[in-house]
Each structure stands twice: as structure tokens, then as C-alpha cells.
Image 1 (tube, helix red, strand yellow):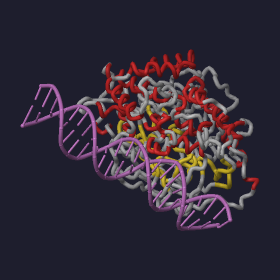
Image 2 (cartoon, chains in turn green, yellow, cyan):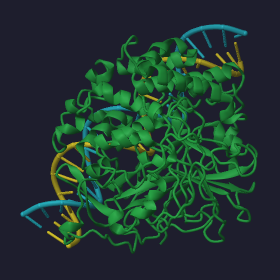
Image 3 (cartoon, helix red, strand yellow):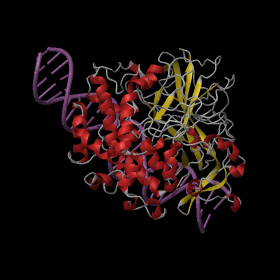
Length: 592
DNA sequence: ACGCTCGCATCAGGTGGGAAACGG
DNA sequence: CCGTTTCCCACCTGATGCGAGCGT
């Protein structure tokens, strides 16, 4: 949460103009000056991730087309006896293979970045070690294996990220949109893990929206010790469980009700996977029990009111709860695909209010392609990875940096404390009680509906990428029928490697037809249940059944198809009872 | 008669906008 | 005075409960 007690905003109107830097977008566009923190003595540390001297495609590096999740190395930190859930962890990431089974589409995944041993904030000096490439051949099973995490709704996140994502924070808590949704692989099937999200300050600066763009404005207060950890209610659970389904944090809320001052600062959500004992107690006796993942595109600026009208429009267009604000609700669903839900920014009535029109140089279709075709450009080695702190990108900058998603996963011992944030994650419904919540997270009753069960009738929206789609058809499935949207988890990624590789290949060989091909195949590949839902959706949305499907919808359908295929081939495993409808609804409060 | 599916109505909750309130 | 924050509003979605219809 922002503005926790004792946290005073570092923002001051008296700040010297000299402290105000140019738009982050501009910075990001220039690699030479992109080191946002060089002025703060962090440039050297940043080089850790960038390693610009390393070829982006060295022999050891996965090729841009490589599907195999990249699980580079990182430093293995010695376990600490301190905080159970260190807020400052090493971030690692893996570039999500396009076509990772359950989740969807080929471009729905994003790699997380691996950071060095840093304090609660991301911006502090990164002292991590080693090349992320060193562990490319990490074991995928058994002790010491590295988990691989994929951001499921990456396209949607990217859309927001291009304009610098903003998240509303309120006293009562406001859900994130897009929300965090991951797929995890590489866990020990039988080992138990706690999975939780932490939000840390990603930037040492306070940001202000001025002149249609975000500019730095003083220093952010990073001294607070707030609770920014949201443990997934299904924790602890087995690796098989976590890998079986999409891990969604759709109901996670951001609040500032415990704070005294909200800093319009940039935050970075992190996903932590901690191996624990069967009772959920973290075993600090061994190393490498904690793995952290950070996705740069998840960065956001916490605000009490939207500043960038582009973001507002994206929220309205993609968040089903905001449908009432869509000016052209009827026409939206009757218009050509490209104008629907991912309307041309220039067509937005508010698009030009603040932000220069130049923001939308790309045509809508191209934008979509940009999102969907990322896979072919994403497979770079981590050396090229863009520091997560370098996220305030202009659309143009994003275009360039978005192609460099790749990082490694990093294990670490539990060490460190949350030192950076003012952002509280607040789950409001939930009785998620757990002794595993070291940060004073309030136990709340938890809704059991899986986040992905939301909006089942939105197979055609990009929002589906944000709200998930896997469980969209569960309601149509007989309760007696064990159903898992995800293919066999017992085999994890390996089983799907060939399939995904083929997809990657297809993308590379014919990326231009990616969207269309998916759209074309979507109807025929729908399962009966899905078709039913699709029909319902069409009825409700007054959407032509013959109409085009949005890119994301295609992806979602694709995901469903994969799941269905898995089911049909009996390759899936039964869902654990708790898996159905288990939605992440966490409540996190700052420490008094 | 029983169980199941489906459609409808109701309710709780989420959404951004806009005005009011607040604070420097 | 101005920028920021809070509150209320209308609109929307999703979950749930209920009853009707249908098949066994």
C-alpha cells in the first residue's frame, strides 16, 4: 500500500527542476541513456542484467525461436534465518514459450527478470551474480530444479505497459487490472510450495503526469515497511497442483488505507515460490528454496485517479466491469475485429486529450500484431533483458524493449525484508487464514471461484487475457466430470515441448498469418461446451457468430482447445478438490 | 417421483466519471 | 488557488437461488 504510516512522501513541490528527468519513454528509447538510475549510482549494477556486451543470440542462448523455457541462473543465495519471505529477492525469469498449454496463446507469456540480491526495492544496486545463461541446463525436476513462470495475460499487460500502466488504489482496495496470472512449470511434483505475490517499489522516483507524459518528480519514499505480500490461498500446495492450473491473483486488491501518504510511484509485482514442508512451514535449512520472478510488463504506477486517458480507455475497453463506460458499446461488438475491444487509440474520443497523437503511430492491426507476434522476437538471452526498472516506456520504446523479455529464475534463501513499499495488497473476501503470512496479512474468507471463471462469455475480448479464460467453460461441465483446463501436469512442460516448438516454428515461418489462422480455426475447434458459451457470448454481445475473433480471444480459445485436447486424450489429471474455483483473494495490510 | 438442466430474477460487488472535500 | 483524494452514482458482471421443463 502506498502511504503506510510513517511513510512520508518524498515528493515535494520544491524539488529541483534538475531532478526532474525527461519522460521515461525517452530514456528507454535510448539505450545509451536508458540507464535510468545511472544518476543514482546504479548504472553499474544495472549492467548486470543488460550485459550489452553479450551477443543476444549466443550459441548458448536460446534462439529467438527457441521454445524451451529459459531457466538461467542466477545466484543461489544462502538461506537466511531472517524473514521467511524475503521481500527482496532475486528475480528470475523465463521467457514463456508461446503456446504453453493451458494458458493460451502464444504470446501470452512473458519472462520474468532475475535480479540480483536487492533490497526490498528493485532499484537498489543489483549485485547478482553470474550470467543468466549459466544455468540453461538446469534440471527440470528433482532437487535444485528451477521453476519456470509464465505470465499468462501478457498481451494485455503489454498493451497497458506501452502507455505506462496505472493502477487505482483506494482505501477499500481496488482490484488490479489487468491482474496477475501465471503458469508455473518446473516444480517438483510432490514437493510443497507457497506461492505469493509481493509488490515492491520499482523505481526510486516519484512520478507525476505532466504534459501528457510521466515525468520523475522527486524521490519516492522507500523506507516504509508495509505488507505487500499476498500469499495465494491455495498455499501451501504441491508442485503438481501449482503446475496443473493457472495461478491467478485476480482478486488481489491494492489499497492505501493504512497509509498516510500516497506516492505516485512505480511498483513492480513479484511472484515468489517458496518450497515448504507439508504443513506450510518454510524449510530454511536448505538453500534455493525460494524462487522469485519478475515481469517488467507488470510494473505500474499507483494512482488515486487515472492520469493517462489512454490507460483509462484501455481499462474501459478491456475490463468487463467498466463496460458501462464504453461510449460505443453496441457498435463495438458489431464493428470489425480490429475496432473492437482493442480500438484504435486514435479513434478513442479521449486519446488526444493529453497524450500526443504520436503515441498511436501504429495502426490498430499492427498493434495487435505487435502483441501477438512477440514470441518470435522475445527469445533473447537475459543479457539483453531490459531491467525491470526501466519500464516507463513510451510506446516506441516499448516496441523495442518488449522484444527482449527473457530472464532467469533464481533461487534464494529466505532473506531480507520488505523495505520498499507503500502499496498494500488487500484481499477483501477471504478467509484465507494462514500462519504462513509473516507480514500480518489479515485472514479473510476466500472466494472459491477461480479467477478464470470470470467472464466466461468473453471469448472474443482481449480482456479474456486479463480475466482468464480457462475456467470459462467449467460451469458447463458436469460436476462429476473431473476437469482440468490444463493438460497433464505430471509431465509438465516437457510433454508439450514438441507441440509448442511446432507452434513457435509456425510463428516464425508465418507470423503474419498468426492471427488469422487462429481466428479461422477457432470455431471449428471449439468443444461443445465452448461453442455453447461462445454462442451465449455472441447473443449477449450481439456479436456476429461469423464475425472475427480478437487476437486474444483466439488465444484463449486456443488455450481452451489445448486443454480440451488434453482432456480428450485423457492426458489430464484430475483437479484437486481445492482447485475448482479457488480464486486468489488476498488481503494484505500494512503493519501497524 | 426423482434428478438434472436451463432460464430468469435477485443480489453483491467492481468499474470509471464527476463532483465535493481536502490539503499544501 | 490548484492539485490531489474521496465519495457517490449509474452501469455492468458474476454468483446464487428458484422454479419450470424434461428425461429416466
